[in-house]
Length: 42
Image (cartoon, rainbow, N blue to C red; front, side, top):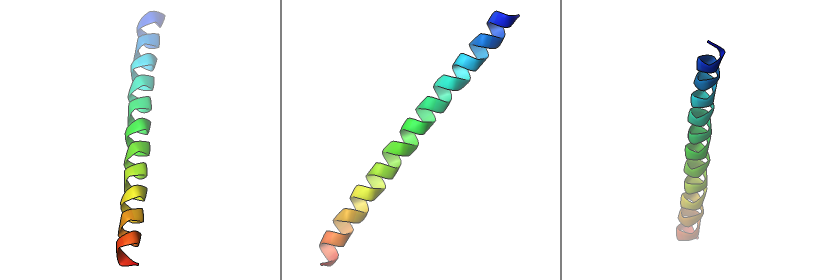
């Protein structure tokens, strides 16, 4: 019973880590994109 519960927590944790990585990659991409647009406008 406890083992199954621990497995669920591990799966949830892995999912959260993947989600955080995707979000941080996306924000880095957006920052780079805005820098490029600022360069083009100048």
